[in-house]
Image (cartoon, rainbow, N blue to C red; front, top):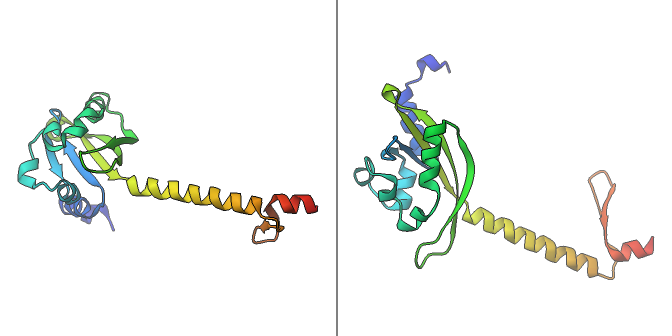
Length: 170
């Protein structure tokens, strides 16, 4: 498809509606210029109650203790993208959540500066990774303590690992 045939505004709205991350666009005052449906759904907010509001007005108080506000300001000043940062958030009565986010500078109409914030809740992925590591360690301890000879090979038959019993037998 040629870019000249693309309706950029339609594309922008379609992308904002379908990307499964929370996306917010801020101006230099950290007022929200644009927000996607994912953020509104997760924050239980409305477009009317979000647009034009400042960062500290739309995020819960616990977020205000993070460096997010200053990091957005730094991106606005330096024009440098901040890639894949992490922050934790705990609201009263809610389990700890971990967010991964990036902040990218934007040029707005009239040469004004803006920033786009893309956030993802990565809590479940991190917990799953921790669980996989625990299972791997548990399985490794079982294999190592087994009295039977255990050898693992790659698809071509080359030996990858062996346990203590296999080492004693060789």
